[in-house]
Image (cartoon, rainbow, N blue to C red; front, side, top):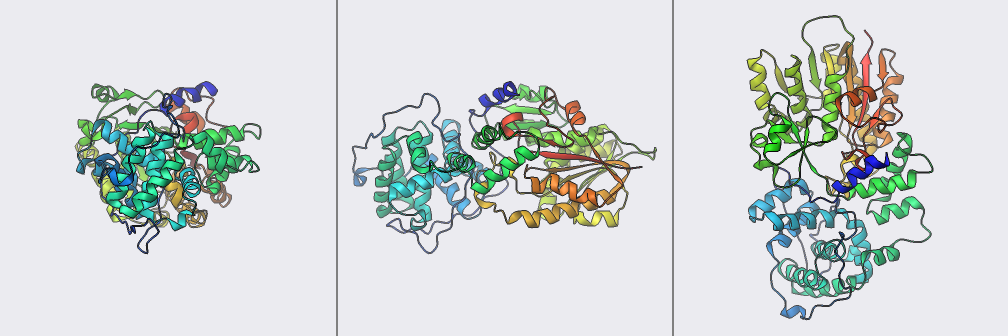
Length: 545
């Protein structure tokens, strides 16, 4: 197990990749010239960076000061830092880094090193917000609630350059002051200069000793050191124990590994949709085969949209763990009487990643697929994802249908109608925090109640829609016990017609080299620090025939 984890530790240090963009979020500022919080301010978002430690070889003299007074420095920020700031303000207004940043880079014509710098700056400052805000409060000698939101984002960007990147202190201070002068005002620039000068007097290790209480328990310390809300750290600790990934003796170390993985740059994973493109073809354009998932490829650098197969829909950006969910559903054995070709259902298909792979697999197995999505605009994304596969299915006499509807209605409207059903239930997304830097700061424990009710209703509906002998996969991108084993257990308590299958043999069949890493069963929980994937959960169920 340790050796397996070690292979993925190196991956965590690779540069962040870029995602295709479908929309641009709005931007808000509301800054006052003196750096205090204004009436129009919006609270910040948060999420992911490079583990909270400067990369190897980034040692620099601490306490180095800028020789220039604020009035002598540049009046405008450079394009990369301005792009990062713009996305940070968009996040504060409800935007998403993975959607907004690529468009911002294109609009400012940033590429190569400048684009990589802006990406690390945005993701790192957002991921490590929990650390930086505590440091900023000390350095500014005031609560962050008294600092204007735009100025606070400028300070977060400056703090990440000082404590989490290879930027020399004088350059981090000078460029941050120039940025503040442009976007926050001259008065705020003085505050930014003073705060960053004080932050530069110590390195990250020393600051961590100041902001972490010696009396805190292990979970609280880990939450602060790895910049997670404490409730998430506690939930992940419980999940490690509940899914059998940890013992009481190992859970503290395993929790630290999970939280550190959330702060690591996730590799760009591509899916080669079977029958449309091969991993070998993607390799011609610079991708490499994934070591464990046969349909997956890794893109070590560059924009995925530059690959022809991605542009025309034969391949796409998709986490390898997400691919395993679809592969497991397609490979699980049925027990049913012969009655024509199979019918498959993706109950919660938007935005279409798993549906795209399921469509390709359905064509290979000569099955029909219905992809359902409750939100019309997401259903349009599903239809766009399935466009190439739909053309191929039509030529083969098969049907790929995209519907807009409530998944909770299928059990009543189409009872016992489908042989394979995927329930990729809406969830907190706590298993994908490394890819969604703002998510950890937006989610609240109160979200679990509403999501839990919906998850149970969707699973119950799917089981009613499942034909005798058919199989269903219940999946979430969250390891939280309240969204995984508790949901499955509660639904199955009310049914005597459903078998809870051991998913591990099927997952081992569709992957390579994961034997012994899949826990005690019967469900499978993937972990970023173990499998190098998002934290996908899947349960395999079969209706008795």
